[in-house]
Length: 204
Ligand SMILES: [Fe+2]
Ligand SMILES: [Fe+2]
Image 1: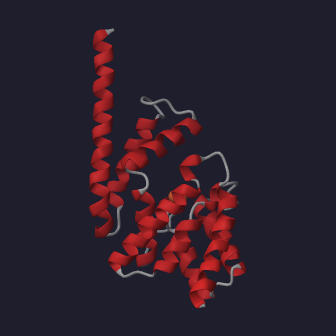
Image 2: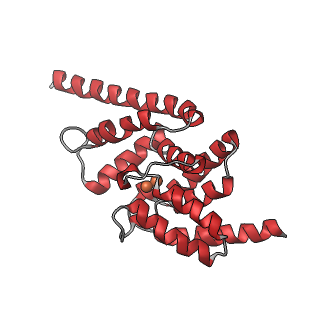
Image 3: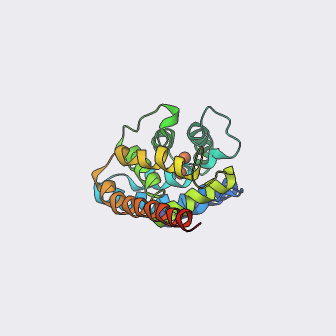
């Protein structure tokens, strides 16, 4: 019976989250949140962390991207999540742990993840920005922002400045094992892209 009650609570959270993610930014949509949740559950199991905290934090971590009211989207997401989880009937202790993880999933707010659950959420989020999925998200974001492929303020500079930087900033060793081959795939992609561009220049 308790399991069914928990599932209902979780479904309620997913439904509310879906409403927040129903916007044009397909790089940060419900699908992204659901993939972060799967990475998070995997890492939680490997590292013996609280899977419920991570699952809820993953589902809600980017909801504040639509019309951020706080300084950063992480802080907005955290604030909105507290209300959503209170309405769904979660305990205060759990809500605070989810909030702390969400606030620290982006370093732009100046909060470092300092619990295992916060570190896992941070890592799970970055794992969704590498590999083939990472490339699709990068170019989706580039399309929304109107970035060119290469050059100043481009998809490539976002890749170099942001995504490459994650490599040094993955917190758990368990996540590093998954991150590395996906990151190398992206590096190879950019090499291939430049090789193609060079060929065009030489044949032109
Ligand atoms: Fe985020
Ligand atoms: Fe995210």
